[in-house]
Image 1: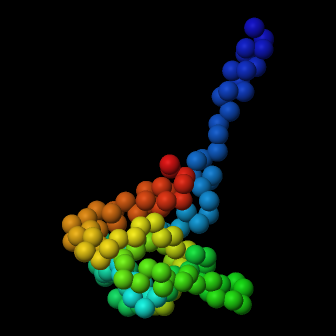
Image 2 (image 1 turned 30 degrees about the vertical axis):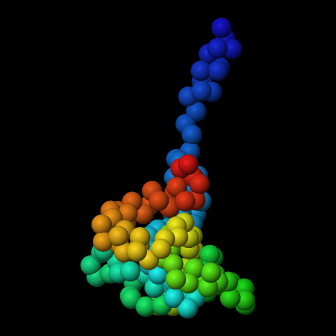
Image 3 (image 1 turned 90 degrees about the vertical axis):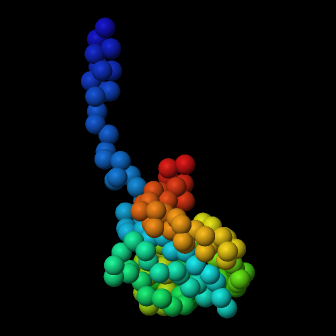
Length: 140
């Protein structure tokens, strides 16, 4: 029975806070962008969740990593294959030209994008952290 007591003592060990196990990039603000791609540039629809909006209307490039890139070469995604379609993107950072730490998780035709924008985009924005965790594979 002595072994059983030792096992119970070991079982009461407190595990680390689960948030401490989440990769650093997912501890940042995650934002859902959605919109058409034209001429290789992403044109996100306006932010419906916040006033004033978190980003300005315009044409953006996407980068999978941090921007500006620590290396001297530009690490921008080639969006030309998405011309004529709309994409859904989760990203952590953006400026007036580049949305960085971006993960494309959906491709829609432009009519579908308009429907989602009109009827569901604000509700999707309320779930940005959950969508980010799912897209990253942590909560699958």
